[in-house]
Image 1: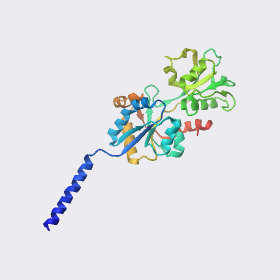
Image 2: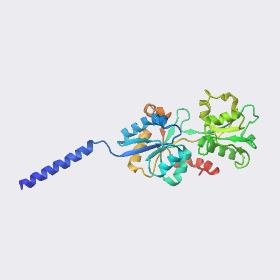
Image 3: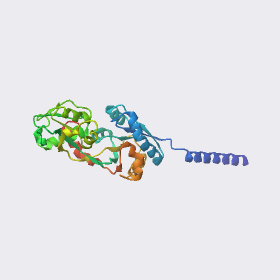
Image 4: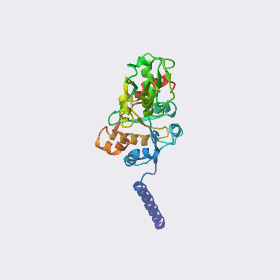
Length: 287
């Protein structure tokens, strides 16, 4: 009887020891954080490592950055369950939302633009072009087909201004970079071009932007969202969301965590906030 009692006591001690070890061990779960590769992998790693570290600390789960090689690889990673959370431009988000079952967690804010941004159309000051309607019959250039503020927003603006986006102007091959759009306008290779509004000022050190003027502004659209993929555990997603929303816009903690990513913090977001963008994307067959 004593022998059995001793064995039982030892078993209880072992069970308690295992429970204690599990309590003090760091979480073994891993959250893979995919970032749309609009810059080089080295740049994005520097920019977003502090946020990954912060989320690791706040959630108790290891957050690891994943930087795909290009936009298509990012989309494939989201659809294929290779990432748990993602950060992408709003157009990529609404495209993926159609089939990938994404859940928006938080809306990013930038130091100057805040939680919303818009596109502009620029023309040379000496072009004689004064307004959007003057672009009928002209040659236009944009960034790329998946550029929200460098193509999609402008298409909606042109449509709402009474132009037929299929036949009222010539669309030149995509420039692929915002500064190349402006350069094409300066060089008179294009009559006008579409870029993100806050990118124009950033070009003043390498382009003579005094030669161009803004002839049209799109509506404002919500900024880049952070989202959870269908693969993400609901409980972990809730922890990530809470952690992101603790980084209030322009708050001291946000500056430390996402300042390197050129962000000012995060705000609440809803999928319906992107309905107008869906309308713009549908106009040019991007949905």
